[in-house]
Amino acid sequence: MARKIARAPLDYLNMPAMKAWLAGVFIFLYTPLLILILFSFNDSKANVVWKGFTLKWYVKAFENTQLREALFNSLLIAGVCTVISIVLGALMAFAFWRFKFPFKGPLESGMNLPIVVPEICFGVAVLMFFAKIGFPNDLPYPFNLTQIILAHVTFAFPFVAIVVRARLESFNPELEAAALDLGASRYQAFRDVIVPHMKPGLIAGGLLAFTLSLDDFVITFFASGPGTITFPVKVYSMVRFSVTPEVNAASTIIILITVLATVLALRAQSATTKES
Amino acid sequence: MQDWREDKTFFRATIALPVIWFMIFFVAPMAMVWAYSVGENVGPVEVAITGTFSNYAKAFSPEVLKVMWNSVWLALATTVICLVVAFPVALAMTFADEKQKTWLLLLIMLPFWTNLLIRTYALIAVMRTSGVINSGLEGLHNLLGVFGMQMGVFEPLPLLYNKFAVVVGLVYVHLPFMVLPLYAALDRLDKSLIEASLDLGAGHLETIRRVIVPLAAPGIAAGLVITFIPALGAYLTPDLLGGPDDLMIASLIERQFKRANDWPFGAALSFILMYITLIFFAIRAFMERKGGKVGAH
Image (cartoon, rainbow over all chains, first blue to last red; front, side, top):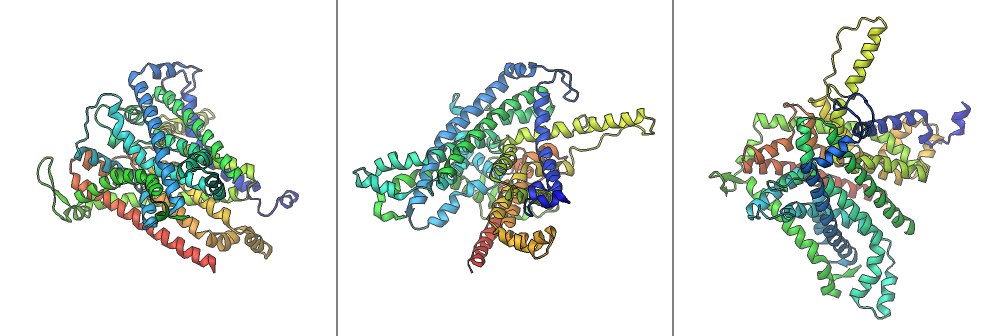
């Protein structure tokens, strides 16, 4: 009873039942991932019983040329997609933040559609589009990744725009007015005053675009021409056949990259909210 | 905010690229799919846009309706389970202190950022016949046998390749979709109303039912839509975790394009999914506007 009084009435986090519930949820969310990582170090192919520590699956994953190529392709696609998405997303965020113009509302809802449209619908549309316009399927590497990059940018840049737009809300327009008063041109003011203010948003949005691109399977599956393999597509074909520690090792590497990108993105974003 | 006419060149310079990109790589492909959805196969690779509704009509044949019903049912079950699981989490997050909030948010979001395929694969490794759960149960079973209990032969639980696996997988993947809007809604609530309810003698459950839920209704609606739509269109999870009878719409669409080669029918199915998505988001937008007006009074 004494403990119950010590807890504030709205301090739900300290309710024993609530703690148990949260623990349950996090066990559900994390156990599969932790087991996946754990067994990437397991010295047994069976993936069930712990037989001792080894790094041989990592060596094997790196010796698997196809897997390595797929991983590199995915990182390359994600990198290029990030750069283009940042530019497009920043421009979109700025234009919608700054200007009033006819059909603004509908256009904005429309441009956010790629975020809400089911992946399968967009994937199919991309497949059809590239087939119908006769997009060359046999470009030399790395240009055969173009279709995938174009598709990824299309769904990634509206996300960047949302993040950057949120950042712009905290911009003090007087700063820009001051720059203009002091003789800067519109473009100089944009480049030297507004873009630096956007920066944390650009970083956070860019990392978001990076993880979205790295994560995507369905759209890549439809957009890729024959012979182009990305990491998720490769893992998909491996998983269909069997569960092997090699896939665990490769997955662990991707998880590491994602966690790193997420932590960096959150840092950039928390810098955003602290200043505003 | 500035009128675009005051600075036309600057306006055009900033908006042109994103809009052009959106038109070419989103609107044009989607328009093509829509055109195909009212077209007919006239040759092995040729399709004539005839304005027919036969592809949509085909979607109402019993076999296809069964898949649709399956998808809706699985997505609904997923959404309801997500709501039940996520609500306490969002509530706890709302009343946690700043530091705990950040950590809880990070813990919820981290799996969300992790590759979908990897997460699905992780679930397979846990749930398959010789996976961690079944091996654990078998160990327990054998242990009880050692202590002289009559246990019979161990039967591994059929955890994978059925509807149960699909729902578990969909909940696993979509839980953050539910937590975030719920948290956003609960966080905005006027906490003194909850305190008042508790002060006036209502219990916690009654406060949740009669104060928190009605006030957070727009957020709950948002969570339901944001979870239901991607769950309905999910491709990977039912494909990898479900059995042959657990097809969902997305797999059916994929088949029309990659195997059956009936693009018009696939396009129609894809647009049925699009229409459902748009209707749900329109309803949500409408409710949000209504909710906003009520709040303003």
